[in-house]
Length: 218
Image 1 (cartoon, rainbow, N blue to C red):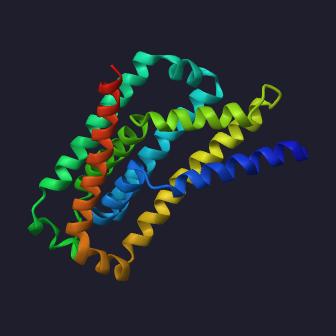
Image 2: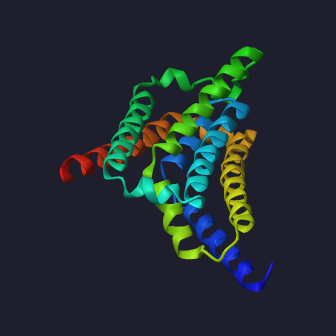
């Protein structure tokens, strides 16, 4: 691998990681799941989000991302569905009573089938959050358009795509494990009701603004 490709790799990897540090709907969802659910189930959210990112990365790498981004009707549909999905998540976060948070510090799930179902549900939730966020598609498209010229070989593009997918997954898992530590979890549990309401407000605000921006432009 020559110096030019190494420079491209580190530039793209750095830009991608800095974007991860900026809290968005996916980050809020990970924190919410880590605080309310079993650690293994919460990892399902991380897997779902990473899978959605992998889909968009793959589409951008093969050139389909540009076609999707150019489709006005498709982008509008994605934004509306994504905004409504965030509003749906916000509604459930805001309607939960305070009594539902009392046992978070000692919650343990022994039913294997229940764990499996919950993991799948969380995975689907994470995937839907990631795939219905058009900003993910536009971010990868703009990043690859600037950094990856036609001269860059397919093998390097695949390596970069795999790297970014793993970073998304491992970053979310790191957040989950941090919030799963008993000392950290105990502190957060005391505030879990308010944290969940705050995440509900954030998700709801983002979802409302997305839908509003689409309707205003029509």
